[in-house]
Image 1: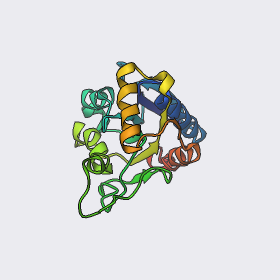
Image 2: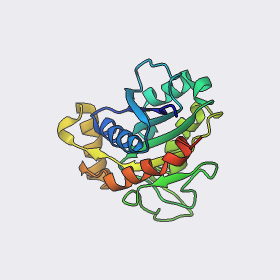
Image 3: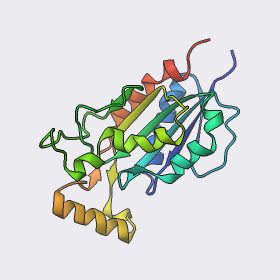
Image 4: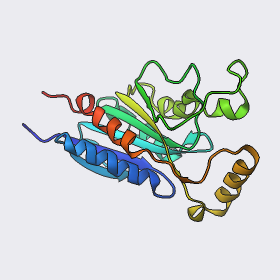
Length: 205
């Protein structure tokens, strides 16, 4: 039986997303696949791969343009392969629309809070809905139907931030008590999600 190959593509700013991509790749490797890693900004041929996982950090309520750009550039090829997405963010609104029901969405159990008033979401709550942060990936190539999506809590280290990011996130914390500093990545949840992808990304012949 030929060795199956998977590409894990990642888009981030300060290394956290790349580390999560490495953990996902390691789990998929335990399924018997050969797994490669690539930044989303790189040009890479997808021809050798049976499956592709695309991940991005969330900045200003959106996946990074490198991730959406990768999907748009490769949309025709990706539509013919098995694809999964993952996102890293610090905040999430858990509401009745927690998932786009066309696809299976796994949420980090440590991520997110219910809205204060479900009948009247604040601007912050609306911009941190699952549907809001996931839409740019899905809209980049609607013909791609991912076999799964994982959304996990990320890491915030003020010492690593560019000045503009530092100022905005500090103000966010002081004004709203949102986006706390620290490494909040739930490695158990990340690895469990990656392992759960094996049957759908790498089905047995």
